[in-house]
Image 1 (tube, rainbow, N blue to C red):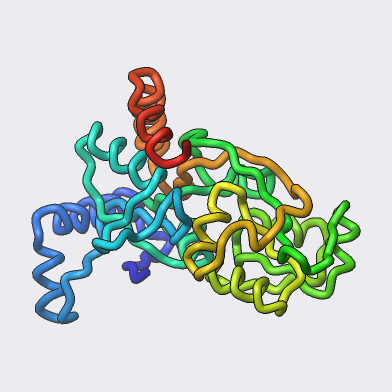
Image 2 (image 1 turned 180 degrees about the horizontal axis):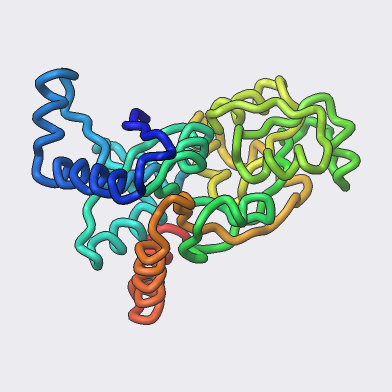
Length: 267
């Protein structure tokens, strides 16, 4: 992300005025025109940046090239209720995660809320509960009955910056093979390049089908953890804005909209 940077001695009011004018240019099309003229692109960051990953059925790109899924429908409904419209961008999780840590007015979903992350972001939710397992290739003969068993494996596959990868590193795992693409990690498991793949039960089946395998070709050998997942906002986002999203989500749960979206994707 590219910014204007101000010396810390510049008064806050000047910086705020400058940001206000940039946001105005985003909203009235002036910044888009400048991008087209000088950058040969109409890709202009909005006042709010919303990122997600390929993580079916929570978020994914369908056959029409649209970003859809349970989390995407929830976020879309919240924006609709608040008349706030921003494009949802798809990226690898580790990229979106770093951007959310370092940029204001940044939204990343869906994210599991863990003790390690709790004070790093602002949270809207919960949207649901996620159980995470060590998956082994069915028929491999590999059994995992404890974390110690998992630590003694030659290679455990994880996805970079996923909460499970962070948690295992906190636990002292030194046998992790990490990458940004969960489907690539599923392929490594089936090809015998790793002994286990750490993945959430919510998305496991879709990830495996995405690379041409059936879910029963792998076995949930050991449950690592269970946690709730949320919409996360960067600390540089207005607390009032985040509270507005939480109120909209609460209203969706009250009027049945949340249950309708949940049953569409997760039941």
